[in-house]
Length: 276
Image 1 (cartoon, helix red, strand yellow):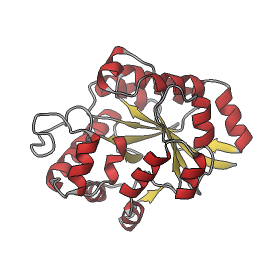
Image 2: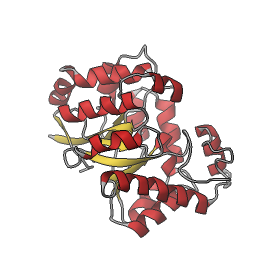
Image 3: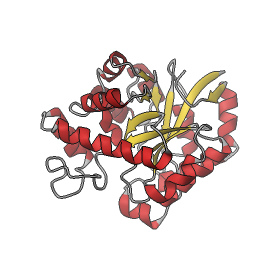
Image 4: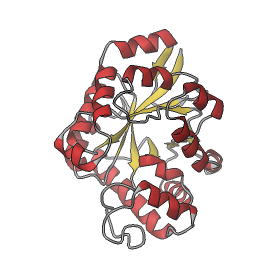
């Protein structure tokens, strides 16, 4: 059997998303989730997630592109709200981020995680993969190295040939891989393990069947693979906060169906809580 981490991103984004992820975790249909600790619903949803620690991995979904920071960020969020993903990438590539400001927000989001769950995360990744950007990755590695312990980190890059053979959202996957160049090496030099192989990129197009999305995501896997997903129940809060709506419900239904465990059996796969 080949072991693979299946991580549901965005726990805490809304109550509906969080409840969907909790349902899948209790069914054994995911093996990890990463939490947005700056989201308004995080405080009320975190206690239910805490009860699942040990059965799934629970990580921090570092968020610098949606909603408000947990403390003042006059350079990145001068009006109290994070920039768009495109604006963050532009600032990172131009060297305009303030490392001390970024480090302070990373600390605050980690503190919020630990306050709610009673300990550090099992891993860290980033909303829209912000954690690998220049000016952010260094701050993250410094903060985590100082706080300890040595958790694992998501590397959102993969082999170009694997991305192209999957054939879904390939341009997005290749772009993120380019932005993540050097992240794995930096993480390992700092003493952190990473996954090797990453998939699950989606165009978030409701016309693409979730079954096809996951069939492709669970193909061309690396040696320590991680697959991301974005399930959840749709509610008014989600429609107001995030552009990814209908495909979350589609992923939720597929992962809860008998078709998903059948896919794992056919591929000789089992879900794991850490890359191995």
